[in-house]
Amino acid sequence: MALTSMTGFARRDGRFEAWRFAWEMRSVNGRGLDLRFRTPQGFDAVEAKARALAGDRLARGTVSVGLTVAREGSGRVFQVDTDLLEALIATAGRYADRPGVTPASIDGLLAIRGVVDIVDALPDEAAQKGLEEALLAAFDATLDDFVAARRQEGAALLRILSAQVDEIARLAAEAEALPARTPEAIKARLLDQLSVLLAREDIDPARLHQEAALLATRADVREELDRLSAHVAQARDLLAAEGAVGRRLDFLAQEFNRETNTLCSKSNDTELTRIGLALKATVDQFKEQVQNIE
Image (cartoon, rainbow, N blue to C red; front, top):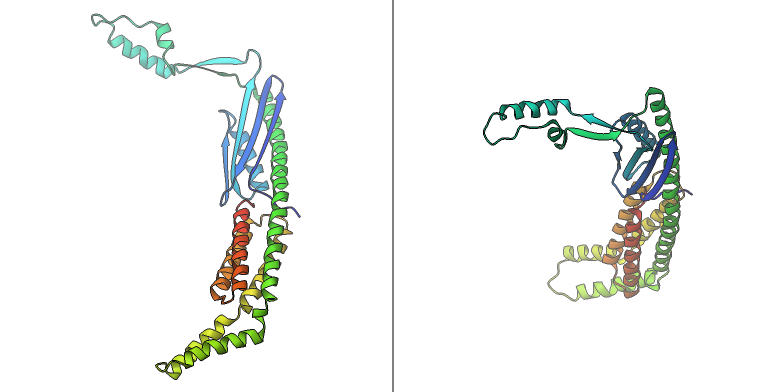
């Protein structure tokens, strides 16, 4: 069994020649798959390929992926925004002859934010290709770690969910075995309730027939218990299945909740009410944990 959580974390550090890099992945719950990449400028091709790899391996969750790349040694270069510098020179020239205005100097213009930017030097074409291959290999390994982390958490969730399904099955069986569920007990309750209705002089036969049918419908929770049993079997099948089953488990949790609510509303026995409330508490816990499943 390989249930997978939607939460996880993984990090990998690597090197290629003079370059150091690190991939980091983390995720939280999400309705679908939302991949959010943050990569340095100039690595768009790496991001596109990494995004495709992640999309093939992941089904749900809000996944944040970060890449940092730095060059060791003298790998820093400066870039001059020549268009901005020329515009500043032209503007300074228009004000140069005005009284009290000190002529602009080139060092002053270069010091203006945005004119000069110091960045890591990109490698040549061959080195760039090697760096991209190293980055993608490291990402693939990070993705393996990330999936393994989500599976490890999924294994813990599997134990919790399996115990909750077992408890739902136990409580349903307890309700099935209640003395109040026997045909004789149900018949006795119906006769008592009908005797109260028959004692009323103002009730007409048609109304009496409707009330009797309603009492008979509410007297037994056979259908609810049968559906709970079917849902338990389906839940166990899903927990044993491969792949992303979170959406189906979430739908099943809603079905559990519906049957439990109906059972509680139909109950006219204190023990059955107690069991129904215990079922509702367990179903609520099941539904909460299911929100974490991919």
